Image (cartoon, rainbow, N blue to C red):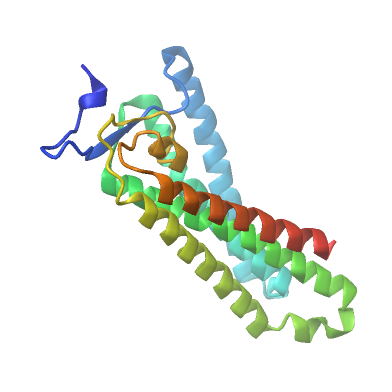
Length: 222
């Protein structure tokens, strides 16, 4: 069967994709399935345990643990967006609809970007605690921490929307096999039979911004 021609509608636009996963070698699929399942379970249990501990222990209701709570939350969500689909590719053909693919792309970008800026906020918190200890309670008040966290999620939402909005209009008619374990932007761009200039420009601008700003902020904090 020619999988590249599967799921083509009357308008020659692909309605669903096949995620190839990490490997197509049968002898590796089962061992890799249990390996990544174990890693995922450890990640989920670890992050959930940390979240519950921070919520239940009043002594941990400080800015540092507040940001650590959000870091664990985004890490938990980030891994849950991609790992179940990746595990599926080890046991059966992993077919994902166009709508599901765009949804996965949005949440992947959202949580990855959030994680970058939460690490930036944590770096600023440590800078304030070490360099301005007498003003720390004012500098990192509950209101400031809340505003910083809101800013993190707003940045993630806006930039994830930018990525997704630039990908949705693309028409995929050259094939539907994604050589990846998730709906990754570059893998999708390779399948598009329409101009990808806008999408590539958005990727370049957003990625450059997300690398430069957090990196500089963290370096300056040190």
